[in-house]
Each structure stands twice: as C-alpha cells, then as structure tokens.
View: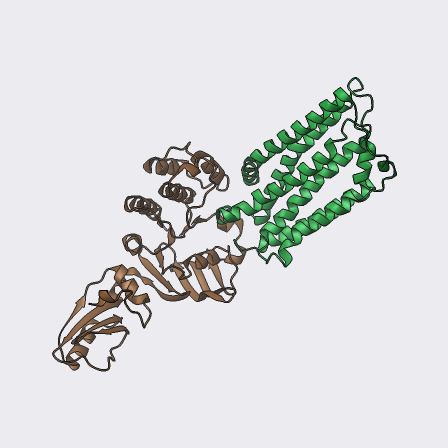
Length: 232
Length: 307
C-alpha cells in the first residue's frame, strides 16, 4: 500500500514526460514509416555491410527495413528520457526542498528509491517500449512493406530502451551525490556514458546486454548506498 | 516517572569547518510542549534534522522514542509527525490527493474526521492544488497532515514563519488540538517568542549551536531579570552580583541583566553599593530572550537608540 502510494506519486510526476516522449517518438517514427511506405527505403552506404559494431549493424539491418530511421530516434529519445526522469526524480526534490517531506515517513529510504525506479521502468515501457513494439508489428505486415524487419532489430530496440534506464540510474546517482562535481559526483553520468559506448560499439547482443546488466547493477548498488546514507 | 521522548547526547554537527550544533545535551519529557528558540542561524533546523535522522551527526547521538535517530525504523517514524520548514509539499497535488498519499503511510492511525474537520476549520477547499495555496494555507495543510495520524511526538520546524497574526493564531489553536490529546509531545522551533509564550510549557534556547537553556517556561521567565539602579553620584566601578549577564552604564544609572538571583539578593547588593533606588523591570519573553542571547559586547545597531 505504501509502495503503491509512492509509485502512484512518482508515475504522476513522470506522466508529462511519458506523454511527451511517446508523442515525439510516435510522431517521428510514424512519419518515417509513412515515408518508407510511400516512397520505399533509403539507400544506405555500402560500408555498413562490413560493420563490426551494433551502431553500424543498424545501418546494415535497416538498409531494407522500414524501421531504418527509427533506431537512432529511439536511442536518442531513450537517453533523453532517462536524463529527464533522473533529474525529475532525484534533482527537482532537492531544489524544491521536498526531500525531507518525502523521506520522513514510515518506509525505508530504499523503498522510496524502488518506487522511483519502478515508475521509471513503467514510463519507459509505455512511452517507448509499447510504441516500439507497435512500430515493429506494423512494419511486419507483408502487405505494407516488401522487406520485413528481422527480430534482431526488435531486440536492439529494447537494448536502446535499457540504455535509457542506465542513463536514468547514472543521473540518479549523480543527483543524489553530495560530493563535488570534479570528484566522485560525476561518476554516475560518466559511468552511464561508458556503458552506452560499450553497448553501442559491441556487435554481440549477449555482450551488449551483459554490459547493461553489469553496469546497472553497479549503479544500483551505489545508489542504494548513497540514498541510505545521504543527508536530506 | 515521566518518560523521555527525545534525548540528545553531545550532538555535534559541522558543515565543513562551520560548527552548526555544538555538543547538544537535551532531554524532552513526554507530554510537554517545548518551544525551541534561537536566532537565525542558531542551529535549530540542523538540530531538528539531526534528531529526525535526516542529517548525520559529526559526533554524539540522539534518540527519539527510545530509538537511535540514525536508525529510525518505519514503525518509529509512524509515531512522529514532522512539519518541515517552509511547508514544502508536492505542489502538483491537490489537498485531497495529498491526504490520500499521506493516509497510505498511516493505515491504522489516520483520523479522516480530524483531517476533514481541520481543513474545514481552516476553510480550505480540498480540490485546490498546493501550488495555488498561499504560504499560510500551505502551513495549515501541513499541520493537518502532521496531526491527522495522531502522532505521539510532533516536531515542527519554524511552522509559523511568514504567517500573518491571524493565521498564526489559527495554527497555534490547531496545535493545541493535538496537545489536548493526552500525553502528546510537541517540539517546535520558532523565533516568534509570542507564539512560544502562548502555547509552550517548556523552553529550549540554542545560540550559535550551543544549548543555553532547557527548563520550564516559568523558570525561564522568573530567572532572567532586568534591574535598573540609580545612584546619587557615579555608578560602582565593579559589579560583582551573582548571575550577571550584561551590565550597561549611563551617568548615574546601572542597567543589569541578571540570571537567577532572588529579589532579596538584588536588594542587598543595591544597599551595599549605595544605590539610591532600584527597580526590577518586567520584561516579556522576547526581551528576556534577546537579553539572554545577546553577546557580551553587544551594542545598539544605531547610535541614536542610546540617546
């Protein structure tokens, strides 16, 4: 009941960003699909055929895919959403001085954090995950497109969504830290950036997901420690 | 035996090299209304946050309802109401939403009727958003939210700051509602001494992080005295009366701020030092507080005040 109350609050605070992201992604993605449907695919450079990294593989895999333009848009909106939600959940309460009101209640501090994280995951799932799945299923119809997207494209989309969550965790850690910017405070965002690079330039999906999981676990343990000991 | 609900031992807090709270040893018994007073920057908010475990002490410890403040369990927190400084609430919520949110954390204790009565008493529409409320109205909502779970201990950080006289009175009456519930303890910080005088039965004075007084309000009122002595010629060179805090001289008058001595002692000293007459000036709590916490080399801000 307490967790649900916290979750409802966090979801309500995330709602404007959830809607905005969904609308932006839907609009750009929808426009791209329409263009692809009406005028066919873009002809991407041949160099993508010799790709070693996922970022380049995207070009290859999307070359004949109606989802070709949506991938980078998904990546950018996911990273942007992670940053914005992290700021909303962990920085804004500091500026509005609502942390003490939130923290002094009959729940553990970690429960407050888990509610925020759960709200962020739901926000990602609805605003990006659901729209991404809808795009995929739309582009899988042979009547609409001659070349259908392969499953790997769909999975990579989820990888990009997961990267957004890593950015969210990085922003959370930096937001919660009371250290100086040029010392350990920047660690959260810097580490998230490292994970993004490690994932995007990794060709093997399994390794990419492993990098995300390990990175997220490190950030989670740091956040858990910080929120438990931080002064509000 | 009266139980101690709040206890600090050598509680100390540094912000960098700035000492905010200095070895605070405090005991607040159950069932009292304690005014926690101090000037701006005296360390009231820091002390309160340390007591609530929102800040970590540099040294010392604090216990609330028998539990270490650094490890307050959710069950203990449920028994403690807290009104934050500036009444910072979630601005996007309406009063009704905030009530629902707050109620979730006190499933067994929450008093719906009490909350509704208080909101009605303050004449606040439940549908109104917090962001559309004035400072005073937010204070009223804040108080209602803190009182509705019927906490054993209510801690309020400068709750009447920035409120006009009428709303302050309403606020204090709301607080008295809680006091009327048997055995409840209230600790509220304030620098409005009139408020403290109106509702408190105990006073804690903190100055530059140091505890200066922790006693009943009557004791404090009786202890701090201002005496004006008139002399025929010049005033005595040395003033050696017991409990002397401040001594101000004019041509043939001596103004003494004393702590503690009985009226008879003052009379004896006056006779011994050849005072023509003396009288003990009746001070209100605000004057007593200002004199009590004034530094030894205190001087008037404007020279014309001394004429």
